[in-house]
Amino acid sequence: MEFKHPLFFLLLLMLPFLLLLSKKRSRAFLGFSSLDSFGTHPWSFKIISYHFLPYLRVLVFTLLVIALARPEKVTAEKEYQTKGVDIVIALDLSGSMLAEDFKPENRLVVAKQEAIKFIRGRENDRIGLVVFARKAFTQCPLTLDYEVLTTLLDQLETGMIADGTAIGLGLAQAVNRLRDSDAKSKVIILITDGENNSGNIDPVTAAELAKTFSVKVYTIAVGKGGLVPFPVNDPLFGKRYVQAEVAIDETTLKRIADITGGLFFRARDPKSLAEIYEKINKLETTEVKVKEYRSYEPLFWYFLLPALAILLFEVLLSRTYLLKVP
Image (cartoon, rainbow, N blue to C red):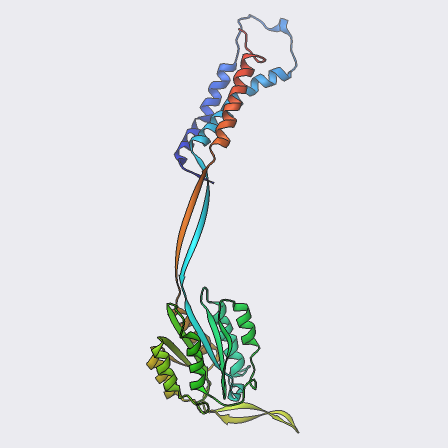
């Protein structure tokens, strides 16, 4: 509830004076030298009611002041007009993503965790998921259902696709999901730890395709580089680790980003990967316009009518049952 003319509440400062004046006018005086002959009389309902009359007048005055302040019930409706960002995360599922240089987890686990945090931090943006190894597949089309998307992302494992690293194929698949989009901005976040060694589409060709459809590509190379601990399942001794080196084609990833107007990032540990997602989150903001419609319902009748009713009751009471006779 709001008040259209709240300055009328200043009139309530007159209440003490009004109460004092009402009590003075309600007193009766008779000239007698002594009241001993009258004795003492117990308080009756009529006497109590008579002394209550000034408070009725104060109540009437208060209700009238509230009515003058014009109380209103305000109903607000908001209409959101958004120009969101369409984002496709293209994630490498090749076997090298199992390298455990992102202690205590491997590269894939950390990549999934940070991608999920990024998704949950967005609003009003459609996000899709493409995975690639030797081939590329759309794991989830563009959607606003982040719960379904994060569930599908969390379930990803290496071995779901034949091993290999088809960066060009994965990028082309992601572009295909965005080519018909009419979003304010179209973005691909490409995450890989290797170099293109599979597929029939060259990464640079896929980047040129992305540029044609005004798709910006942020490329992220994950991994420390050099020799890294890599798990091997030995049928005789079980799980053991070997030191392996995974080559990362930074040159191609930088070129992809340059062609499409994106940026290249290198994530050497979980903290740096989280910071990269935070930078992308700030770079790709969503434009939201809000229009608010307000309707007003007057409520002064709820105070004016009781005030008039109480005033009428007080006048009738003072002129009949509580009539004062000099």
